[in-house]
Amino acid sequence: MTTVICFGTRPEWLKVKPLTKVLDSYKLLFTGQHTDLLKDVKTDYHININDCESGKRLDQIVSDCLLQFPDGDFESVLVQGDTISAFACALAGFHSKKKVIHLEAGLRTYNLDHPYPEEAYRQMISRIADINLCPTSLSKNTLKNELVKGECHVVGNTILDNLLSYKKKCEYTNKVLVTLHRRENHDLIYDWFKTINEIAKNNSDLEFILPIHPNPNVQKHKNILTNVNVIEPLDHEKLLDISVKCKLVISDSGGLQEESSFLNKKIIVCRETTERPEGKESGQLTICKSPNQLNRIFQSLNTNYKINCICPYGNGRSSEKIAEILNEI
Image (cartoon, one colour):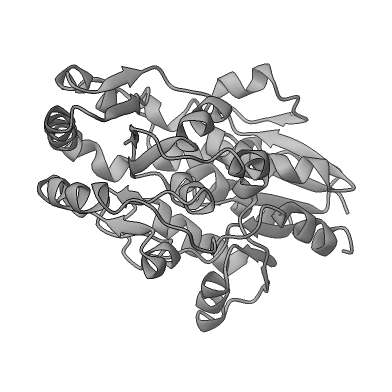
């Protein structure tokens, strides 16, 4: 079975890249959000959606994907996560009578506004997916409770397959890694940055490092971060170099929630909720719903930052499990 693997953003590529090393037959479809990926990745198909951050309406982006989706010689379509292009490519595959495979299936907040619009996209993908590749038993049980029609398999999270060589390098230093970029936080970025800057000022023994996201809604507030080491966006390897040495993580990223768990780093998640609640049970993850809560949470973790727990998202060999499932079809 030949599978078309769809991706368009850096986080998507990082999670599907391990599959390219183990699947017997696949083709790559690029949906065009982060065009710098094309410098290092050779693709078979290219859809141009002109990036979600260009001001284009979401329904126009879905339309672009549907109209440009290829009529190729393949039997299945694999999408990752909950981006608008993942939903559109899954829908195109469904319309074409291809098997739809959903990687990282079963994540839920059950709040369509948090995150918006991703929560709706992943729920809709689940209704048409033939194979659901779930990161945890909790996500599988979620889909079973929703009575989805597709197969459900617990495979772990493929992002961890990239981290095996880094786990041995972990240590705690005076670095605090900060990333903020989610659409749901855009109206609060100024308040988050102001609070983080104040915390950094009052904890001068720590180095707060923030790779600034290129989105204009984030960039326009960076000058307030006078006590933070604001740097240009990093590739994944350089970001991991900071992650393995940091003391704490402050972020709204989904991928960093998984990676920090694997690397035994506590993370403060700057969101009202998370679709990855497994980390809360071990104390590795703490939700911070608003900027005015951040200082209190940070101070409590700053003196209690070490943790050693079993990562609920897998052991770094998820792609091998997925290959066993897909190569048999």
